Length: 97
Picture 1 (cartoon, rainbow, N blue to C red):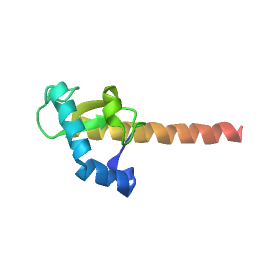
Picture 2 (tube, rainbow, N blue to C red; picture 1 turned 180 degrees about the vertical axis):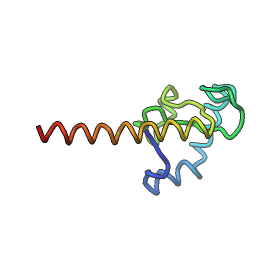
Picture 3 (cartoon, helix red, strand yellow; picture 1 turned 90 degrees about the horizontal axis):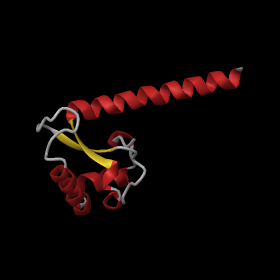
């Protein structure tokens, strides 16, 4: 899961400034009808990396991208942050047994 706040400066710059990413982003917005995949909103849209494993090569993996509104994009990132924390917690507990 890619969270721009947790990315390298190089990747942040790529997402912010690279013309290649801007074309990819526009293609995904067009493909998804300029609407959030979850609620249909047309406001404050983000292109979300579903798995986030293809950094800098998104053009080869458009299925790993989808459009989300700010609200749902933030919710998904918060959810996965909680899931990651729970996995870490249970892994620590398992090691203690």
